[in-house]
Image (tube, rainbow, N blue to C red; front, side, top):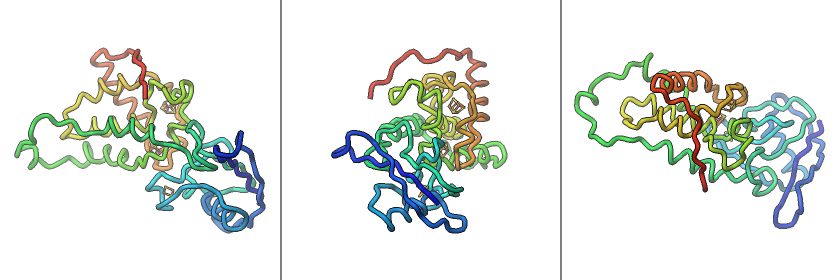
Length: 238
Ligand code: SF4
Ligand code: SF4
Ligand code: FES
């Protein structure tokens, strides 16, 4: 099997270049195993991974133009593996996700100005209505695949007014959190809820199986009920 890998070391290379490697395809080989095979057989490659099980989100790369988690994506045959598009390349397949993570982390803090009451604390949480919808959003490991593939984000680049699907998932999670007291619907509108064109790409590339469009639809219904239907006008500088 022929695996092509985009390489780039900004300290010595003027631009990225592609190298082809021949490796033996094993049964059920993942993209990550193919990268490791190249790394061990030919030459050192810069790439990132940890859990090998869709939990850390560190292994995300682009395969033939489609973002995916390398550890859980089966390699089908000859392909081109490149860094996650839409992010600055640190080296080879490693990208800089710092501003992506920072922006989401700032959104996702629980807002709770008042003390949790004893009644609230003792009230059982309804599994079907509260816990189940929250559970799917908890599977987001912030791999960045959806952000990388989202046309609403990538049209504007790193300074996009739209926080992107992963950030919107974090807001949807807090909106479902029964202890959170933030106005997450207004915040979602401010962060670009109406910038999404409902293309479904985030659903397709998300290895965690999160149903983004259902989350957006629920947030939009709540926003519409309050007349919050404007796209944000502010610019983020970071
Ligand atoms: S929503 Fe899915 S694709 Fe997006 S960052 Fe989370 S796990 Fe990755
Ligand atoms: S559905 Fe919306 S958030 Fe998801 S990829 Fe398309 S534009 Fe982006
Ligand atoms: S190595 Fe952790 S998600 Fe792939």
